[in-house]
Image 1 (cartoon, helix red, strand yellow):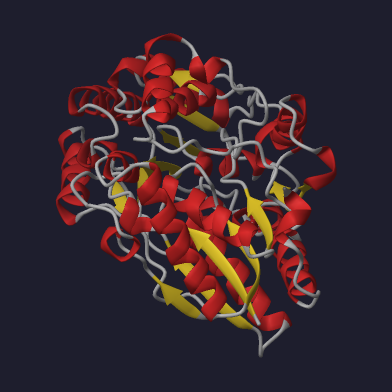
Image 2: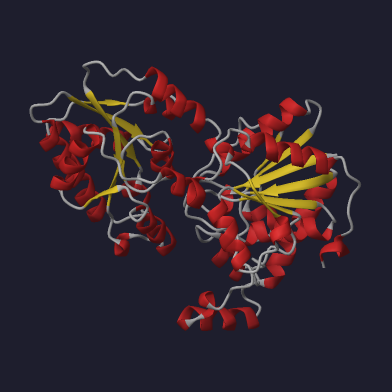
Length: 423
């Protein structure tokens, strides 16, 4: 009997690999399957090769749809719509059955391939769970769908559904046995939207299990003697991956560099450039040049992120969950504001806007960076970390991975359920 985990790109690989490792430690003989769904959305990259267990990476061809577009939605539409969805569901039913899968954990269910996997598991009576993607995200719509159906997009969606060109997504949560939500604020919102509260368990994000230990290490071991002021720049490759317009990224990065340069005058400052793992070499070189052009002493902050949290005095960057993690470690944060109209996806723009509204210092001009860093050195940090934990970060006791892994193992040991129980 098998436990199956499924995810795409972004935070999914790290989360699922942590869970798979924990399952393996708790139950060494447990069969594990990881569905790498990243081939259906080419806007991101993922690496699951080093995950525990068997890794399956289905492709559009495997499930019977075309691969003309970067995302699954239009590929499903041009491959037969609802008929293509049925083919995907049959593929996943076959894969799940072949491995004797008893329990499935999804990282999200927005995409049509994930929806097909969800429906396949439900049809087979497999116990199904989902863990959310973390800060500034909701895994389901619940019963509150009116907003998504307004305007031209809503009208077009109804036409496509009625024509059978696009399947309907089920975002109610009805097929799930357990929803692992990683912050109380998100759990409350899901209940407000009509998701069954009995299915929800608030747990710490596996990715954040080390935050508490890092915060303690920072408090206990941080070198407070005379030393360079260390600012960690948490860089995201938005310029090269097309998430934000190049002009806007250039403007914001130049603004941050000008502010850091102005702050460094008369001070011993070192900027650690922490680049996202998917950052290409050309982007790394461009960031190093940006620092040199502004006369800023810098170095690449390689190795584990949390090791750099211990000794840094402040962090700067665009929106990312790493900024929230830094704040939870009592590190002052500066967020560079990005114009919402510069984003390729408005969902990402909404996350960036939310990051500027949690109490961090927000930089629009170089002087804002200087003002914020000066205040940080004087111990003025206005972020309400407890409120941030409740709304976005979630519990930080370091037990999230173990809690989810234990549930998966317990459910795998139960007799197979009946599909009709969820209907």
